[in-house]
Image 1 (cartoon, rainbow over the protein chains, first blue to last red):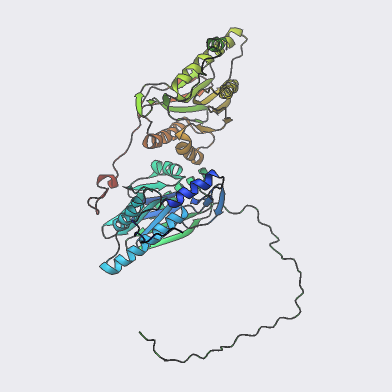
Image 2: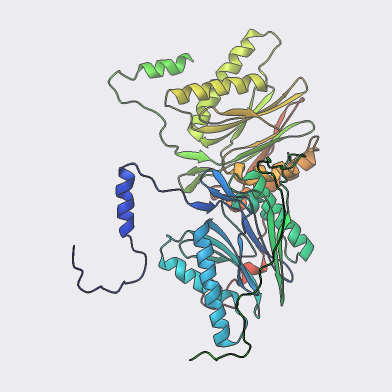
Length: 273
Length: 242
């Protein structure tokens, strides 16, 4: 056994040792399992009072749909939400991490979080990992400086846009946006346009499907409309329903509620520090 | 055709195989749809040389015979070769002088065979073709790709048009579009392509074919809008960011 006398503290960043092992295994014919990706359509647009985010709900593992109704609009702060496309684990982890960093920051400063804070934290993390954290995000929110909408790419670059789409269905959704977007949309027009764009992704892109989630963020108020539209109902449902085959006959049904076996003493010994 | 076989005969048995391996001067998407009286087809006039837009007056839609329009994206030289082939075909057909002429269905079938056979010889014509026409009141619109995939539909697009224009057409196309509505719909698609396809140029032609005949419009440019407030000062609220 080799003696690594002193453990050198890790320099941070991604450790590529296992990549060498993976290459060796791949040469021997053992392939990696495919990633669970959210092959996706996610969109965001700025309307007159704030930001509307939209997403489809299909998660794929290669050619198979592994989750028909997943949530792609992640909570970052009470006034900031983030849609994620790419590897599902990466989008979940990175948005969770930045969300908790934002909360700590809120406690520290005593103020509402700003969208650019979330943007900078995400951008720093993704650039640090040089694109290996495959998360493509649409970040939107309303803070004291107004409504903001940003896209963040896996390598860490960002854009600030009036309307944005990401994911495999982004071209289909962008076609809808480019032809129908105008400034000063009302809330209903905005929601309709977002729904149109996501439906365009759902029906024209193979990596997107199932239902439409929408999130409307305005000053001081947010509406998370989970499954706002269900355009893909099950076409054939068995009218008989399920009936499990009867194997064991039930002779007697008696229910005895459990009694408390431990007595709880109010105002007992205080815990030691 | 005899001319191609003669050319191939000049290649000796020990010479390396010559084939189209990479496209050089390429055209971008073509979009077409059926409307009330016939077919409308639109294509811009750009010929890109890699990432440069080298030629800005390439006519990528041509009338073939009396009844059809052919639009092509991909390698321009292969398109010109095809046009020469089709010219010979139409000529021979006219020489029969039997009152019958090749319609869009026949041309589509011919093009499919040509493309598929070239692909089987590992020497493809690097094009995606859109063939539209009207004969005896019957409208026909079809597409052939460089590997010989062919199909017929009410609206087709090549290249980027598949991703950007088809969703719009699937949403907004309906039977019996009037000429003005058809042109508006095509212009909507071409505008999105102009915004989002890097090899698009703002100079396009719209071609119309009906029972009466073919018209290819003069080249013109689409109006674009770049004045969104978010573009004016994108980093307001985050000085120094981008």
